[in-house]
Image (cartoon, rainbow, N blue to C red):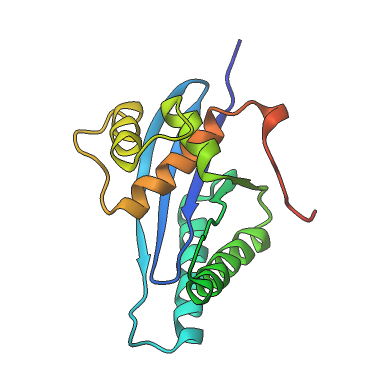
Length: 170
């Protein structure tokens, strides 16, 4: 049986740091294409920061031409102000991906942890170690936001078509 080769863009949303990870999935074979972060400075006006995140996401989409984009769902227990700002950053990244015409998917942190480590309550160290192992990397991807974005992409690659929670408005 021939596997479909997919280029997956994983995004760990934020407004100070937006992590990204681009992988190629060929069945159960995974390969890193690139990972890193789009950063904004606290000294910049908030609308400028959002524009930087939007432009950074657009640049990733144009450079790697992924088949889909995968977002980690937000989870905040306390700080409402931070949640709103991160939500805005997530929104502009999602808008950029939607405008590119590719399918968008979203997974909860627990779904990502389960797909990557087999434990939905895995800690950050376990996640980073499994991302490193699954992608055959010499070191743990840094910063953490990039490792989290790679985890989201791995989750998508390891989730069956029927179970994928697509939310594109097409």
